[in-house]
Amino acid sequence: MSYEAMDFEGLEARIGYTFKDPVLLRTALTHTSFANEYHIGEIPNYERQEFLGDAILEYITSEALYERYPDLSEGELTKRRASLVCEYTLSQISRELGYGDYVFLSKGERLTGGKDRPSILCDLFESVLGGIYLDGGMEPARRYVQQHLLTDLEHKTLFTDAKTILQEYAQKGGGTVAYDLLGQSGPDHNRDYHVQVRIGEKPLAEGHGHSIKGAQMEAAHRAIRELGLC
Image 1 (cartoon, rainbow, N blue to C red):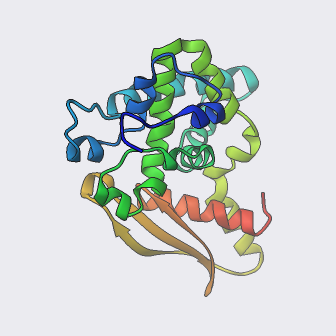
Image 2 (cartoon, rainbow, N blue to C red; image 1 turned 90 degrees about the horizontal axis):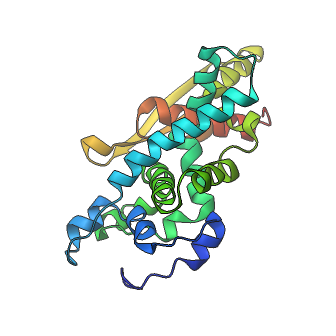
Image 3 (cartoon, helix red, strand yellow; image 1 turned 90 degrees about the vertical axis):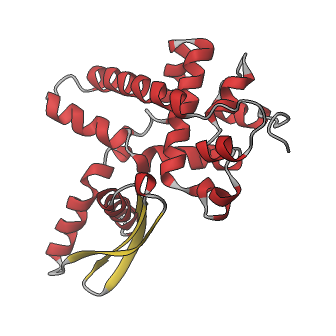
C-alpha cells in the first residue's frame, strides 16, 4: 500500500488510541531513510516526534515510579526508570504492537532488517508517544505509557540486573560468564551490535543493541529468562 493510502485502523486498535490527525501517526512511523529516498513532496520523518516523546516518556515514568515506590531512594528510582525506558524494553513492546509492519523504510533499510532492528523499534515507541501527545494531550499519552509499559514493573526492571543475576548463577555452579561479539552492522551513528553470552563453552542466548553494553544486557536478559531465573 502506498505512503498516503496506508490504513492504520488495525494499529490504532492495538495502540488503544485513534488519531484525530492521522498525519501525526504516519510521521511517527516514517524513518529518515524513507524520507530521504522517496521525494513525495516534503515527507517529514519521525525524529522530532521521537525527541518529544523521549522527554514525555521520562516524565511519565518518573512520576509513576515516584508514586509507586515511596521508600526508594533517588538512585534506585533512576535505576528502575533506566530499565523501563531502555532500548530492549521499548523495542520489545513495539515488536508486540506490530510497529515493524507499518514503519516506512528505504529499500536498503528493509533489506537489512530495519523493521525488526531494536534501535528503530525503540524510536517508534517514542515517536508514536510524541504523536499522541501532539494529537490529544498528556492524558492519552499517559494512558499509552501505562497500558503498554507501566505493567508488570517488577519483571521489566529485571533488565538492568540481568548481567548480575546471570553472573551470580554462574558462580554458584563454578562457571564463568563470557560475552562474544558476533558482528556489527550499520553506519557509525546507528550501529547494531550482535553479542552471544555463554557460561563456559555453553552458549545461552544472543542479543542486539545500539552499543556493545546494550547488546550484552539483552543477551543476559534472554539468558536468565531461558534459565527460568526470572
